[in-house]
Length: 452
Image (cartoon, rainbow, N blue to C red):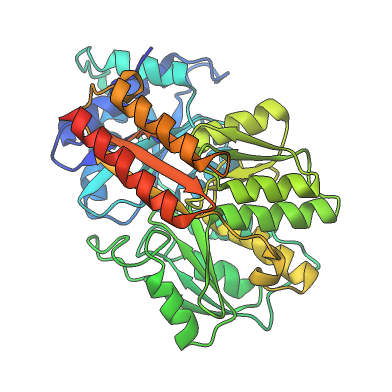
């Protein structure tokens, strides 16, 4: 069954435009609350399920938090509020507090005008599709508020930040520290603004924190994991050893070396995998996605590390990791899952795993990558109508085939529909940068023409 509202990463859109309206968010909370109330949580007789609500720093979080809270309360579900916290922090706190579910109000790396909702299960992972279908089905029914004696209660957690800081630190080896390292951390004016710097400082690093003054409107603006120029300049200006960039909700990470060279998620996964493999700590292989750079796949296989590709989206990476009983996977965008450390992608914890590799081997990011050179990639997003099916369009298929013939085994073409926006993402990758750019433009042009 196709879901109407839920994409690969929850529900997301422009605030004030359906479905991201107060009315819908309250109804969503109510529907989710009724689904959670009916689920078999093995609660004691008379006990209500409890949901934790966290959010990032965008101004609309206040509005959406209140609407979601009202919906859950009307459904007879108790609510805990954490305030601004990274998405992976909510996943951790759900398990630490032994509660039934969690909600993160965030649009991740998007600008402040957008917002969204992500649900987490009692295991600290994304809700299964079956439960999302039940929540969507409940949206067609009216809100029927529970009797006053059965309404959900609301309480604010006061020690959420400290709990999560200690959890992050616990994933870094006790026999190592970060003393002697000067690190710049870019918090994207987002949910990790009051956390990331403390984690690194308490592990011994000299920390310079930037983009950590959220005002509700500046989240992800010319900073963070989707705009690393600010971090690159700060690393060189402060003569730092390394830079770490998170995104607005703290589940993505990019890193920069002392020369200002950027390392994306694919490269960071390779560094972690190589270190774990050579130190006999890698369980199984590595899961990437359809977008993972071909050079990373080839380099892992040369080391003897198995590699598999999942559909784009961290939930699909996690599913394939669980299916194979592996522990490491992620995306070039910086979503990195270390399943032996956490149940979901976590920017701070992933950065600590890279730092573990660097400290353990006494190498830099560049030295850890060795001779691995990423293949040039070109990604073009083409806006299309929601019902547009590019997979059955003859002209698009013909142009793809023409490109593949010209690349002749030294590259690949990938087209996929966005899970969160009405876009077709056209990606071409290969050894020849000129060919990559040419065919990306050609295919994107055909998609645009076919969609109009």
